[in-house]
Length: 31
Image (cartoon, rainbow, N blue to C red; front, side, top):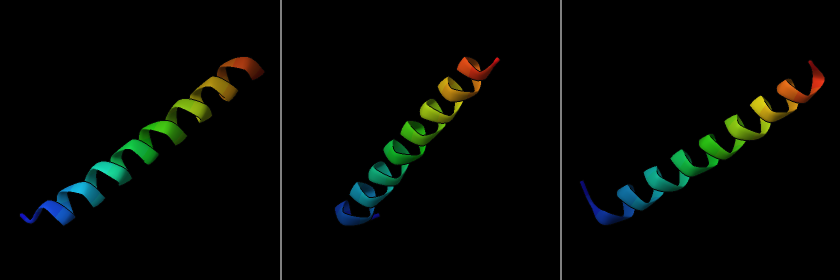
């Protein structure tokens, strides 16, 4: 795996974790 693909994978993973965290926090605050 090239370093470029690894950086893109890390970026997508961080974005996914950020969205999941924001979504779970909003869901927790609504309850």
